[in-house]
Image (tube, rainbow, N blue to C red):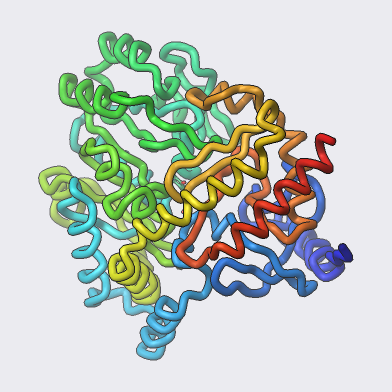
Length: 432
Ligand SMILES: *Cc1c(COP(=O)(O)O)cnc(C)c1O
């Protein structure tokens, strides 16, 4: 293997001088896995090509949005066509209506939806709305769930009972953190205890119905239902952050997949087809509190931007037309078979976790991942080694063992076979 990263290195050196850490989002810096971040020049189907001309099979897929693969023809055409008529008007536009109609028809609990420009913004807005609607200040989130970088969500303090948050980032004030209560995911009793004492102050429970930002954690059977029941009992709004799971686990996201309806849903990633989009939506009586209909203010210069709406719309239409969720399930089944085969010799040390088209590798002796602590205890040094070995074999995984991988409709059986072979070789290098 003759691998050159010369151009990526040069670009990274230049970037480092003018961009903090050389990156516009921290995990991209490869700190968790070592080495130089690769600079990608282009993508096609499931493949990406870096500045030095190396080709990779991509399992990061821009962190999830590219469910149809890179540079999907229909998505690109719709962006080009739309751009010819202008990039932004700051007025109403038919594409935002169309995309909103699609989202409302896809997501069983969403009656009205408002577009913003990122998942972070969607979550911030949904929580402001929940607070405005209930007149309560506090929110409950779960340890290990990522909801973007809003101040009061950068809190994942210990998973102790009713831990009042302490900030995870400098610059987040105690005042911001104090209204966030952090609890362990998949543990009903702790939630019940906190609600018994504090429910009158709690506006919302926000959760990734399937946590995908700290490895991949499945909700235990009945857990989401139980959270829903508790929210009903204490008149607390339930917010599903479906920025990853929406349109991925199923057409209508985790809410359809598990049959549990939240009051509000936040979306992002896939609904923008690779352009910056977020959205929040839900019950009509709650969404009617958003300005200008109601008193909860939220706005955006580029919100509902025609290019982003066009890319999202093209993505949703194609997903539906090709019945992507069946296709992805078939692909995921095949992928899992091959991967499980490739790792069978190393099962003592490595767990492959998958749910539909989402997966993660955990270097742990544990047999299942149920709690955040199960992943905290995994060996991230081994993951870093694994990442480097895979990269050498032209497989691009997200550069952190806490991140999940994604399949797209563009991944082929040949891609999977090559990947399985690379996994086998990489593990052999590491363990044998
Ligand atoms: C990515 C992500 C966000 C944040 O979205 P951005 O577009 O990066 O701001 C929020 N919630 C979840 C579950 C995510 O995976």
